[in-house]
Image (tube, rainbow, N blue to C red; front, side, top):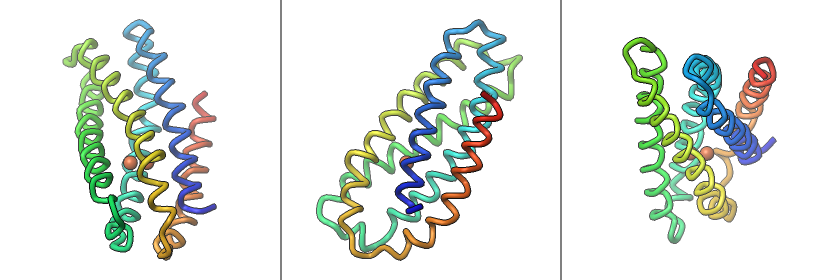
Length: 162
Ligand SMILES: [Fe+2]
Ligand SMILES: [Fe+2]
C-alpha cells in the first residue's frame, strides 16, 4: 500500500469515527460519555500518529518548493494546531467526568468533529493533489509499510468495538 493509500484509508476511518461521535452526542449523558470515551480511545491516538506521518511527508523540501504549496501548507498546519489543541481539551474533559460539565464536553466534541471533517477535506482536495505531482518519492516509500500496519490495527480495533 502506498503511503497516500494508507492516509486515505485512515481518513475514511476518521470520518466514520466522527459520524459515530455525532450520533453519541444525541444520547443521554451516561451513554454519550461512555460511547465518546470508547470512540476517542481509538480516534485520538490514531490521529496523533497520522498527523506525525503527514508532518514528515509534507516537510519534504521538494514538496515545499512547489508553486502555491506554501499557502496550502500554512493552512493545513494551522488546522493541525487547532485540532491538536481541541484533542487535548477533549482528553482532559473525558478524564475528569465529575468536574467537567457535560455541555462543555458536547460543545468541544462537536467543534472537534466539524474541524476534523473540514481538515480531511482540505487535505484530500488541496494538499494531496499537489503532492502527487512530485518526482521525489523516497519519503513516501519508507513510510508506506509502517502505515499499512497501523491502519490494519485501527480497523481491527474499530471492529472489536462495534
Ligand atoms: Fe492532517
Ligand atoms: Fe490527514
